[in-house]
Length: 353
Length: 116
Image 1 (cartoon, rainbow over the protein chains, first blue to last red):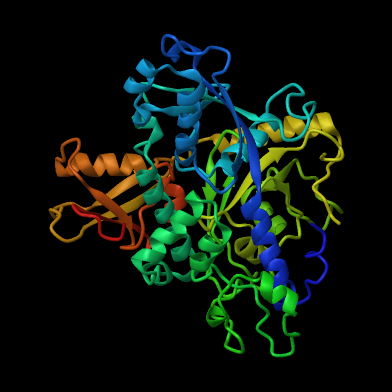
Image 2: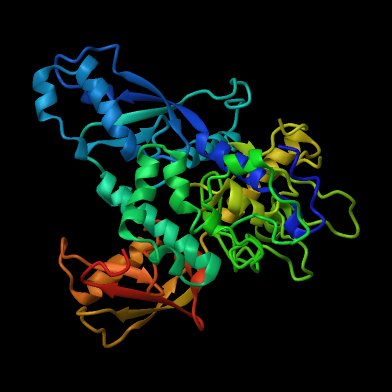
């Protein structure tokens, strides 16, 4: 993660098409380990006890309702008998974390995982730091009595899709002040972007997403043409590239980057995040955090040399460097719903692990 | 490469926890929410309301349903700026900061899906 912090003298030279595609691919392919256990009190009679635990490496960009078919197949094959299978209603299923937090249907799984990681950082004891990396997040699957008022959404893939489309449109509105790019998509394209998530297909997703996501292609005529190798990696259709045109779709032309800050036990904070500061220099993660969370990320002042940060930002499971530019994050490290989710964890050692 | 490293570990953790507590405090500020009917939805006589910013959008929807006398199960679709439906757990504070128009947060409501 060190190659993009080096060339940052001008906003348009920071990223080549190849590196954009690389980071989008890395974001897309990111997975998190989950351990899903059926609540033992709700296991139907005659279940094969001891096997009611399912391990999965789930894509960060997917959602809990989309995992249910796979979990159900496992439970029916291995754990439940035919009688239990007959009365099972998956619309009653819901998830809780091990410590009793309700898990949201409409949060991407990567966000649920990162939020859990930062939550552990704010709790006493050595819980997270003494455990190896990538421990599974333990989830309890309940088979009955969903607390619908707290889940806020019907626990169905359809409700999840609607929420996802809503987030894409909200991101679109933040970037451009309207949702023309989203509403300009044909029905088949809108469905296709969701199918891309469901099937976890990078190309299907980006075929449509490239029409609404800002580009990082350098707009300067002096910039070298992308090499043949990077073109083949690049999934954006040639017609969508603003070659030679003003950078109307560029990451630095947006009104605001869709960013949310997640504090360990809330709140979630959202505000306008312009890609450029008033002096025209790129807005960075550290500028943004100092502005909105000054108690955790004190702004540099003339009197003290180095400000003492008390926390760190986690984006797609990565501790993002302070100089990361918001525009770049929005174009390359946003989730599939278009949002850059920044989970804030507390530093508990000198190195910041 | 610059990092987020800090000074004394014990001190920073307790200071960090204090900061988190401060950010958890609910903001008592209020902003104006303006409801606007779309399509066949009934128009409200009084459509400006002062809403505490720490409320979630879900609470705004529930308030609107009550004002309209909507029964449970009757469909009501809500949008910001005729453009999108926010997540029900997003706060009025966040929505107002990002989407307020001339000092109002405009919430459109419809009996059918409009910009689903």
